[in-house]
Image (cartoon, rainbow, N blue to C red; front, side):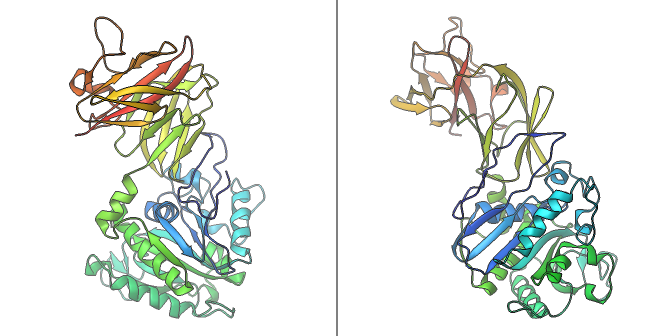
Amino acid sequence: MKFSYFLILAIIASVLSANNHYDFDLIKKGKDDGNTLLVVGGIQGDEPGGFISASLLATHYEITKGSVWIVPNLNFYSIIKRSRGPYGDMNRKFAHLSTKDPEYKTIQRIKSYIKDDNVKLVVNLHDGSGFFRPTYEDKLHSPHRWGQCSIIDQTKLNIPLYGNLKEISDEVVKYVNKNLMKSEHKYHVHNTRTVEGDKEMEKTLTYFAINNGKAAFGNEASKSLVTHERVYYHLLALEKYMDIMGIKYKRKFEFTAKGVYAAINNDIYISMYDNKIKLPLSKIRGFLKYFPIKKDKILDFEASNPLLAIVKEKNIYTIHYGNRRLSKLKADYQEYDEESNTVKFLVDGKLQDVEFGSIVDVSKNFLVKYDENFRVNIIGYTNKKKIETDINIRKNQIATKFSVDKSGDIYRVEYYTKNKFAGMILVKFRS
């Protein structure tokens, strides 16, 4: 799927299986002006602070001036597998790589974006161990640790824009350090001096960028911090890089650790089969039984975040958010009615027209109006008449174990024609 430059929600419309290639997304925000910031996350799948930060930049920021390109899931297979790299460390494949390497095409593709004439500055996001310190303090705080630092490969680069790498890194570090949650989290500049002959660092993405005339930086948050705190520091650094480049933006959440946590975990969802089904994921149950999946076993979906994926194994469809497994759907294979429909609900005594794929907020009770075109199944509700329309239903009349969410507030109302699944509506009781 192609992304609009002004797209707020990054949408994936692909089916991922255990054996196919996991392509990464390039999300373009703002308007290309020859001064683009390229942000890369997910080069290593065990560093969620990096790839979640990139995804939030894609979904929770509006670029009002300038251009930002975002790759939130460069090594998507590694992310899903919760691995540093199932085929080896991807961040050591940018010097020389065999065409037979499973990640060869991925590396060539990201190289093409780095070399693009629009791109002037590259930031690669990582989570590193402990806390980098220029001098040894203890095992967790030392020059051998990588967390909480801005990384450069050399002090200067002879290019028209942003070649003053050390000065830029100093500015970023100074800005982050003005906004620390704890003094221990202090940032430092870490010059790896790759240009002086560090053979390992010569293989990295940032050094490839430098050798192609692009200013490049690594940004490391500490693995000693919980994920949303890592994201907080990555976003601080990214905002400073945007400021340095004259890129203007609007943020859509409160910029505190608590606000970042909410942005990561709230308002994430997938929509399936042309919006016949919408699933909110922030509090979804770990396992949903008898879930209507199209009989051809292909699960078409759109996602509110580029880190969302669905992986099929036999008749179980697992929803992933980055390297977190959110839920498993046990398929109830159905023929699908392709028509889109609107049906009638009585919600707290008020009549509403409701489209399939909607989430209906309910205070006290709801009633599904009878429609001769459909059979209705309210999952978890039973009565002696075995009819589930034209009956006022309260929350306590539906078995909690059948709720979509862990809080027991959201329930499925499924519609069927004679022999086909037609659509789903969720009713959400206000707690």
